[in-house]
Figure: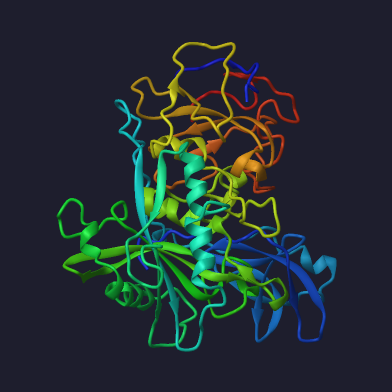
Length: 482
């Protein structure tokens, strides 16, 4: 075990293989048949999701009536005899708060990328990523927002997915529209209509049908750069925008038909002599009622493309026993960051680990005790410090980054230095809050991300609300290994 005293001073120099997205942290109104209503929040992700009341109780709907829920013998949430709004406070005492369903761990297929900065200098990260966006309609559901709306939000020069990735990569990684002949040639957008009704789920038939429907307008073979007859997502990424609604926005309160945003793979399909199998998919619209309906925001797209283009894992807690890294990164609930009208319109940056693992940033190693360090704001500077715990420099380490509420980081919960405890050998991602792949050492020592009390707050960065300027083997939190 190697212990690093680190006194913080002067920091303000300012389908298959499925990945999902966490539910949007919004309050919705749920109604009972008698006309009464209550407020609730969707929780979980595609693997397992539920609704939770404002005071923390899980609820399920049975025969149109919302009931307080209890866990069944297999960990599933079942309806109790108590209807929401009816039981006495004493009756509620039997229901634990913040009690998610138990999710089958076999659903979690681990695909954590090996950090590319380990063992030698990083490869060059500068590249242009071709992206094909397919707008998918059905016999019963068409698009509300025209192709121009998604051309702007994905490839545009304003608040867009392209601009988000440019800012995060410090202008090294640029998303480019795929070459196609549909509508406006080479704007990256192809619209198709499938010959069946919306299935109200992200079915494989949607993916294979969309790829086939776009084939007349794109030569997939030109993206087989290595000539192996397979088009990888780094050669061409495929994003499906599905007409209808996005279920992660509102959970059971989301309007239908809907799909839950995801990244995954299907059995390979062959077009133009090459095989394609990977995709990202989101619903076109966000709404829990006709009054709040709007075009899907960019945060969910940035999150799913993080999976598709880089193989990054989810950094929220997939069994919902903690908040993972919360709002401190787009691969968790930071995908729903907002500074404007709609949640998800300003997703927060990739966390320090994600940037290092993808070569957006080459961390600067600190191998001796340090009493002062100038770390520039990572919203505009590729500045990350790394302190190894593992003497062989392949395992546990700390990453230190300065996060400020600027650019796409404007929606952060606070400002200051974030200290990340990394263990790349952990196969359960961030599901075990006692030993995470990527863990934020909260400066205030409260570890509220681990206890699921919030998704991040001003006490997490250094010095933060606790004015903590010390990180060593005896501080709280401390620099010891697991």
